[in-house]
Structures are given as C-alpha cells and as structure tokens.
Image (cartoon, rainbow, N blue to C red; front, top):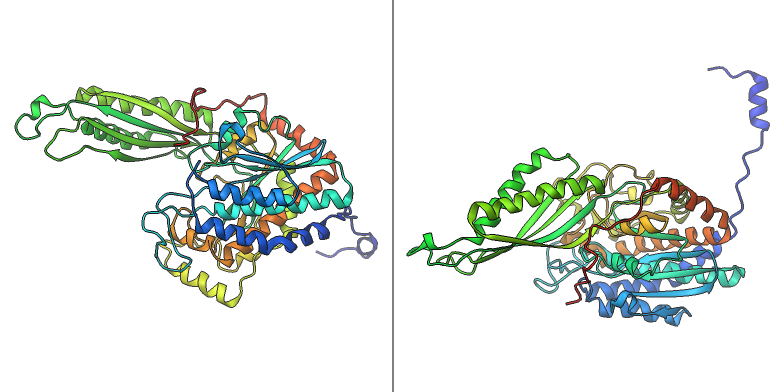
Length: 475
C-alpha cells in the first residue's frame, strides 16, 4: 500500500503517546533484588523441610519471623489455624493483600537432580513449588513496605500466609473467619513453566470420602453370609467411569481407593474411596455432583451395604477482572523473564529429555519471554478461586520450571529446589511488588478494578459448597 506523502509526514511528525510516569518501578525492582538472595535461601529451607497442609509449622515460622524482622505486625493463629498468619505494615486504605502458600504434596520427595531420586522415600515434596510461592510473596511484601516508607504513601500492605492449598482449603476457613473483609485488592501467583497473566476460570471442585459398610464373612466357607463393602466401591467406580461419557467434556472425575479390605479370605466389612469432581462452572458442578451421589448409592443398593460420605473440600472457580489482568501483564513484562546460565540450561535439557509426551507449545528459551494473558481453561483448581469471589484478585504464573515441566511430579519438585526455580521466584516477586506499588500509588486503579469485579460477579454471591460445619483437618 502506498501512503500519501502528506499523511506519512503527519505520522512521522506526530508525537508518540505519552506513557504515564511510573517513578516507583526502579526503586521497587531494586528493593526486590537487594533481598532476593535471602528469600531464595528461605525458599530452599522450606524445600528441604517439606510439610503437608496444616502441618507447615517450620515453613510458616520461617516466613513469619522474617516479616517480623522486617517490621511487619504479625497476627498468628488466624481462623484458629496454627499455620495461618497475617503480616501487615502501613495504615489506612487501600489495603493490598499479597497471598503466600507453603504446603507440600505427599509422596513427592526428590533431590535437586534431573533423575528420580527421593531425598526421603515416601516423604512429602514441593511438587507444586509452594516453597517458591510463599517466599516470593513475602519478598514482594517487604519491597512494597520499603516503597511505602520511602514515598511517604498512605495505605496498607499485607502478606497472608495461607496453609493447606493442596486440598485443605485454608483460604476458605480464613474467608469464613473474616480475614479478608477489609481488603481492597488481592494479588496471587503460582509457579508454572511460563510467564503470563491469568484470565482463565480454573475449575471449581468437590472432594469427598465415601465409606461403605457391609458384613464380614469367611470368603471361602460362607461368602453368602457376607456383604462386601469393596463390591460397593467397585460398582460405584464402574458407574462413575460410565458417567464420564455423559457429562460436559470439561468435567474431571478422579479417585483412589483408600481401603479395600483387610485380607483376601475375609469378605471386606469396610471400604473407602476418595474422590474429586471438577468443572469450570460451580452451578454445573452441583448438577454433576448429584449424579455422582447416585453412582455411590447404586453401589450400596446393589451390594446390600450402607454408604456414607463426607465432603472434605470444595473450591470455587476463579473470577477475573480485566483491569487487574492488564495491571499484572504490564508489570510481568517490566519484571523481565528468566535467563538460564549454560549450566542451568543443561539441567533443563536433561530434565526435558525425561518428560513423556513433552508438549511443543513452548520451547526451551520461552522462559525469557512473557506470554499473552491466558484465557483458555487450566484443568486445575485452587482456593484462590474462593478468594476471588470475596475480593478482586489478580493472578499470574511465573516460569519457575523449564517449559513443559508437569506439576505434581518429581521433576517439578527437583526444579523447585534449584536456582532455576529461584530465578522464577524473583520474577514473581518483582511482578507482585510492582503491581502492589502501582495500586498504592494510584488508588483510582483500585476503584476501577473493584467496579469491574462487581460487573463480573453479575449479582452472584459467594457460596462455598463446603459444609458450613466443616472444620480444618488439623490432625
């Protein structure tokens, strides 16, 4: 296409659109970098002593004491949970929350090497990178506190130590205790194999334990006198597997049999199954759940056993607001990506060679870049979803793992303890700190985000599917 000379001249002469000044960027980035090594050490200590949900005593204490030393006011035992806490600095509005997690996963113990090598056989491990999650969030909070001090700004920065994200729903109990009632905006992130702002709905879920009770008998001499609880479980699982074909394709149903009996020559008197059902729409999930209960009742009816169940956890889908997606996207780009040394790249390559069905979506090297905000469905769940129903919540991913690394595996556990993971942790801390600083420096963004959040809710109120009388499983 030929552009007329006068038009071309006008385009050349036209000034570039003025970008609003962001004087906090360099000081905030500097504050993160100055403390990155220390919080990297904390992330490694948490990685070395992995603790599962509601047992994160040492992990929570490491972060709590570091924030106390940085001048934060700390409230412990939030919602009567020993490993839940809030660290706060500043006064007045806006109140910006930064979310931290630090629980590990059972059975994923792993050394920081590119081959399967448990540190302690059968022990927990940080296969979801929550050692990096909590440490990055705490680092960001400290950097924002310094910004508030040096700039003389009014406002409050809070770090929320939230336990038991891996199925325990710590945030739900903190919401019920009113821990977030005066928060204006919440910011959260998650370790991943890429850098991207998050605008996808995630999956709402329901987790439950089903127990069947039958009648024991000698399995050879008098099997007719027995009623097998294990048969009840098996009929339930068969019905569930037939059900999969007749539910929306976004649905996920997965289970394990916790108990199938005591001995092969005894008709099992008791059996137990743990189940998770997921769907991106909570209302649709409720309908699917009724059909799951019918499968469970069928198992009892067919076998002459009795069935009972207990809902152990339930997470909501995520509510996103576009102003926060845009805020995080620009600050993630300002934070920069992850740059591997030759040794780190060799580690990543060795790890990728061990990956089965390695996705070609992102190649090695993409960790240096920021991807467009993700709006397609992520087939996972988080109790940050519940938080997003009660507070406008910005969420993103940072490349703590080499591209293609599957979460909840020994591979992700290995990387979470290395410098590769810690570099991604620093990217996350910078993004959180820049986003919080921008909200505190320009409260109009807070007002805009809250207005858009109300539109996104569209009159719907938060209602957890977790029974109101359910208590945290503190063991």
